[in-house]
Image (cartoon, rainbow, N blue to C red; front, side):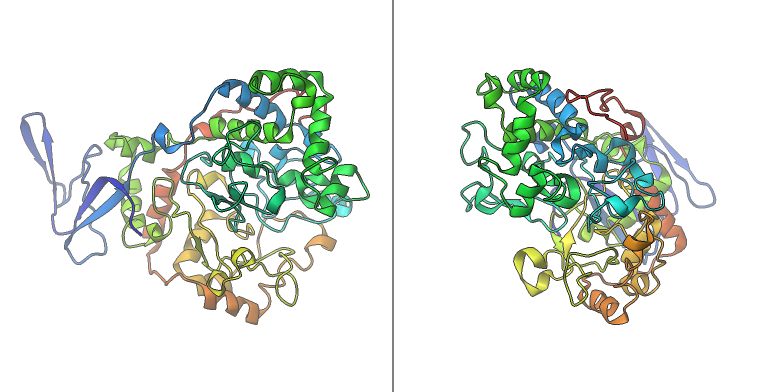
Length: 492
């Protein structure tokens, strides 16, 4: 997979020492035939090659130009979006917020293999983990809650695990989406406000329409009924009903007026498109994550990576083959691949049992897309578990090893996913993985060739993955508000 390069790392397996040029002097340091410098751009590692000199190409460092522009009143939009993100007023039963499943304390996910959405209680891995709590939940969301880091990057033109939301200029709205002809128009098609500013804002339109995620059930509230009927746009649709709620809260009306002064002058002007744009602005500003050790390294700080992290980097972009899919500045080719990740949980209604998930095939209907899912970015991957489209792996190292041997990973799967505990809901969660023919089907469709790495080499890959973590995501919690304008509780 070709991609633009900025830095080039040389691996010289035949040279037993390093040469460092310091100022005008030349110092040769030889220790047991091998020496190193933490600042050297060309730390040579004696790895598995035959001794030939080989070049490893690295992606470009991220810059502001790689992200969507901020636009006018951006700070006001971000503040409005921050409050909306954590406000349960956007759910049908007013009992769950966007941040419940995309929370900063759990890597902008929820820490569970499969989310417990509408009707649940608690936050993070403990959500609905008390015995019997799931009796109030219609069902669990069948796919893992994906992280939100860097989704404002221009290269993201399709979202969700199966890419069912994507920029498409052939569509009247400028997007292909589950909303079909009800999809609000994108600003790239018609900039007249209110219009959807980018695909990240477009994504914010959909969780509120799902009965399992936020809308609730048709017998519970009007939003749930509209969502169940497929009425998303227009009077009485999901988005209109939620906008009406926001118009009734004076504090929100003032915030919308400040964020969208060109067209919001009174309460009646507030639309859910405006809310989605504000949520997208908050996610873009808050969860842009480009200050990892690897970022600093690409920007010229050669001591940003340890020797082991550099070795892992060379494996990642070299013999391990990770960059075949995880390429580019965000470690994703933005394509869809079948990599045989374990299928757990209730599934998407596919197959005889209904517990399979055909992935991208559900969108395109093409045989080559069976069991294919979007290549996830690996930024902050150490904090965004569980991993896989169904969150089947709660151990990142196991997920990495799976990619080296898909058949072995599937056949030896440990049935240890981090699932909400309720016997009635989870008794059949491993149906697919306990069915040899269904496991064989996943193996057969996998595109990944086996790669043999030693335990030490896997250790080095893990070292490099840690270098992709922006430490701010571990230390900054300023985005979480103490209160929201609706007056509803921020914490469960």
